[in-house]
Image (cartoon, rainbow, N blue to C red):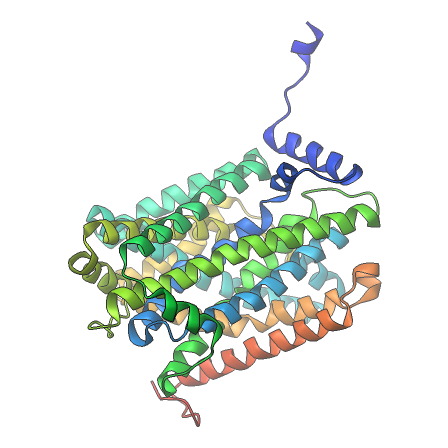
Length: 437
């Protein structure tokens, strides 16, 4: 009778209890690693969002497998920054936006918040439009109707978060797995030249000046501002630790998860390029839009390939749109200590997408513009993350080592330099060695 009166633990509570036991115990079992899977899985959807679809399709269609090495480089840099963001949350118990508010002057904090809010809206524009495009093409609906359905479904996904972190991690994990499995299936359908793909993954090459422009686009749009903010927030209170020994163990588990989750994201991006290379490069090299890719896939590889492509786009759009809203909420609360209802946050970030479609602007072109906006905002979290994770007064014994610090600075420099090139190219500035748009 007494046992029946005891309240049942929620899935999140059971997960937290099990994590605590692993951290306090000895050598974990392989199955225990699943307890620590979640934050990086959620953050990884930023690397498989609809903005990546358009860029990767264009790269594969125009240059075949030649730019696969760029995808690999971009993901290696992304792994480093996501690992640093996760470590920041674990060690300090605060997320990146909260630390910015605590350590930077108020005018700087307000400016960072405003830039980050614009980035959050640009992120949601790409992700929300991607899901709507997939839904409208899959079910033959007007784009505005697809957007309405996408809004309802993403809000439903966001409501799962009220049940705790674990159900949300599982839902996003299922959608991430859907995207990955879809592209595994595509690779069995598309006639991929595996030898050439393997060669170009590890041997850098740029066929012409325009290829450099596309490479800049791939790298410049890979590390997402909201993913850097979000990851620190997902880890800050997920698994409470009592001492440095437990924190060190938790950081180690986090690094493993980041490596696996971002490796999957990188492989999905490579699969996108390989599918586009196999399907479009030898005769349809001008394919650059999601809608065109879908309509071209049907006669080339059959309706199954086209349907799988749309399912992956839809899963990507729905999951990344929900995660983008979560990140926007975290950014607002961290910088200014203000929280609004999730439905209002969802509504505000949807408005630009509805305006774009109502005005008749090309949806895929809107995705490209959103990536440019993200390029402007990207320096804010990257530089802040490098500053905080190298400071011993904030990180203690977990401050970056010299080689990690050097790698982070080098990675930030590469990303920022390429983003500057991307912005100049978009503005029509002629740069030696680059083809003009």
